Image 1 (cartoon, rainbow, N blue to C red):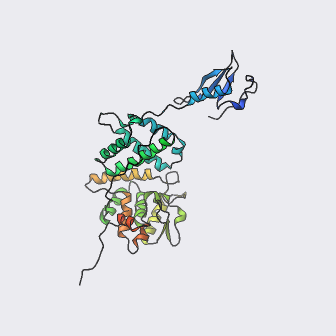
Image 2 (spheres, rainbow, N blue to C red):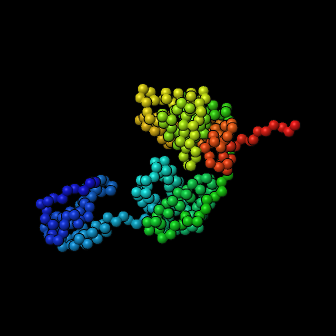
Image 3 (spheres, helix red, strand yellow):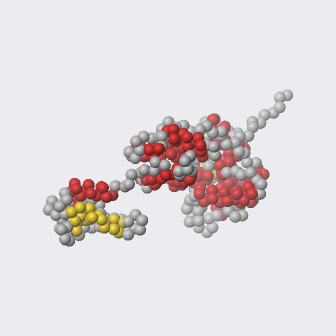
Amino acid sequence: MPPRERNPRTKLPQGIKPDALPPYVYYEAAGRGRYILKRAHPATGRLTTLRLCSSAATVREIWDAYDTLTRPAPAVTLADLIARFEGSPAWADLGRETQRDYRACAQRIQERTTKGGVPIGQTRLTDWTPGALRAYVDKRAEDSRSRANHELRYLRRLFGWAYERDLMDANPGRGVKTLKEAPRQRYVSDGEYAAFLAHAGPRYPYLIPVAEFAYLCRLRLSEVCDLRREDVREEGLFGARRKGSKDALTGWTPRLRKAVEIALGLHGQIAGLYLIPSASRGRMSETTIQTAWQRSMVEWAALGNPRFSTHDLKRKGVSDAEGDKLAASGHRSAAMLRVYDVLPAKAPATR
């Protein structure tokens, strides 16, 4: 709510200048006079008027009353801290996908309970120590090591943010290590890949070029969504990679040209900026694609087929690539390449 102009006819007590008052604070001369705060109610949005102090107050006393009245309630529980974090400028600076991922982590954490049956969200911040966090991660790992590590990274970010702002006396996430995880080795065969696209494509046509770009160009889903029409170049399809991987220009093949044609066919009569357009002709969000993919995959798995993810298609693309696989994958180290190149090496028999 923008500040309202002060009424020039309202005469302030002697020694008080209008510019010295806090935001949304006004002086009412009726009766003995008083300073008031006008602001929108957080629940209803209706404008409310609150008394701050009498007309005899000094500027310092007016500001003290204002700070006391507007100071946010201290974060006592983990749920309080999460709410404070999601309402902060630091949260607003995060990308949409990071926010979505953090919300999912926060929801999963708060859905769990302690040994005593207390929801994790209602635990007090003073209960969180490095040992308590270690115990949570180890317990969570019984269900999923990858999810346990993911939620640990989120909690370390949350507690670090709180510690820097004196909301916690210490950062319980400092020094708590992630668990070792075996790299995913899922290889999608040509047959199951083609069969799934034939199953999902009629309902969600955009999944076909999405899957093809992820496989043929070895791209993450976010990188597929980033593809623009201007990335369709004479030499091939340019893909800007994230997470420190090298950008790549994938040379044309008949199959890649066909995938681009299908993607451009999604635009209709209005050409959008992105190769995979959203309903509003903007960038298709990863969430939309993941939702369609998971719905199709649930139906696919119900037919007795093994599930796979869009990221497994990048792994398939790296594994199937011929020649310099490090260049094809965009990775900067052989160690990272080994995570994606999951097929056994081919070599002729000894003569």
